[in-house]
Image (cartoon, rainbow over all chains, first blue to last red; front, top):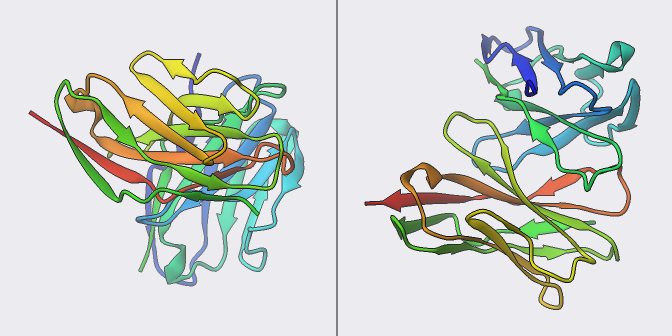
Length: 114
Length: 115
């Protein structure tokens, strides 16, 4: 079974530029999560999708971050415009419905904003 | 609100020895789940073990076991027979009753296994 795929793995941009990250979850996993992990901290949930609907986006900075999950499979997370404090690893995870909730993570995208 | 506390920023252990990584949690939920994840330097979070709040027995997965003490609100990870490949960052996380399986993570413990 293929794991969660993410791209790109690394991205360097200047502040005020825009960037997009892509995630493909494990086949059959209805729930998809985007986390932000700042260096030295644990991951923080940005947004959670159940199929193509948003379950929780309470910690998503909606003035600059947006995410979508069209057709309930792949997802993209966008930042526009980026700030220096957005430098972090962006992790995508997925889980099956009806389980204890263990989430399976992708390799992450390391974003550096200069 | 839920909170996870990991008080050990770094730990060292000799190869083949056992090590315990501490985790305490705070929640008002009656039903919750506790997870441990391993994050090697490559960055990927690897699921290790899960304990449900109503599970009467401590969870075990191979060399990993979870020492669950509900009254103390602790969920310590025990790694037996440490291997060099166990060197990584370890995160404790919690899922509460609401929020659709949202995980709250601690700050992590960096484990270094030495020869």
